[in-house]
Length: 407
Image (cartoon, rainbow, N blue to C red; front, side, top):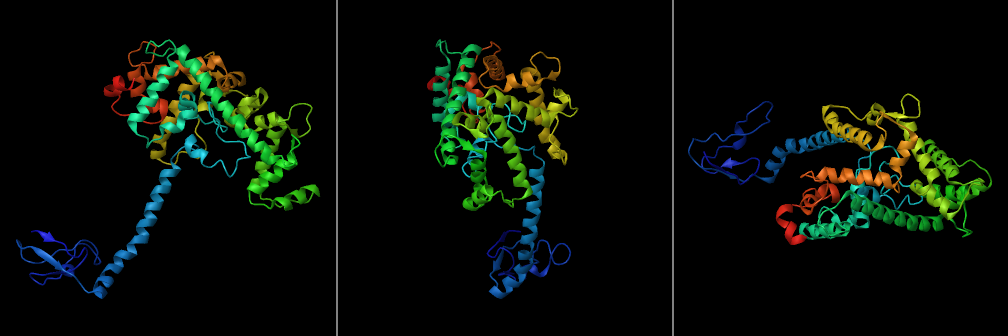
């Protein structure tokens, strides 16, 4: 029979007077309801009084908190299944302002994050440079395709409408230099913020005062306590962060050590990729975190090991299969230079050095290989558009039809 609903939950049939809630499927008065009128008629539900509707809707209202609780549990389970630190650079950038004097967790144009995770935005960073924001997911596809083809023409130095590994290598070095310039400008602004007397040097105590101020402490009170060597009364987690920062401060302080950082030393403190010594320190930290047998080297199994507690269910294991696959390819194709199955500190340092031309050439070859469908060792416009998500982070549709009008 056909039923027209005037009341969403309960009511009476206007033709027969039968109460819709007079017969229910299920137990305990819950479940769906049926009209008991004769077959073949159109059942129209007449509205009930507010009091009656409220009394009948009460059980359903009671279900709402339960449903929300179950939804929350499902979402939490989903989140717990994901590998740590897989947020993109665009997401991380939004959190930088409040902790601007802290060394960033993410370094543009560097292959590994500070905690040893792969930089999943690396290919976009070295292909787009400062133009990354022009390829947001909500950008108009046609404009994005045109911008992508403009970049293609800039990389294609000999204008033969294809990109060689050498051309890509030069482009990667150019884009990396752009990120370096941005880091220098950012560091200069932050240096001035922590150098209140403007003497061109920042002491560890000056930095510590500014750091604790970002954690909600009163700046004057902290300065007074440090001056008089009083207890700062900070929590254990903040104390641990301070100790790690002080180790890094010592490393950035060029000989002879005086715990005073100049502007260039402060740049190394924030951005270790700008200093050979700080890059080596970063490499040591990563190997220390990943090295399981204490030999100060990394085997393949150590490099692809998942963070402790990452996998909690099969869904998590499925997600983490991608983690293992990506890190295995990176280890075998790029990091392990002599292919002996072991990565030394020197190999990892060369791999992470953003200004290493040999590493840039290897990266260029890998980027071309990913999109080189016709296997001619060059990138062509159609291939770049088809693999736009790899190069820009955004998938640009209708690549084949659009290539001639955009190029």
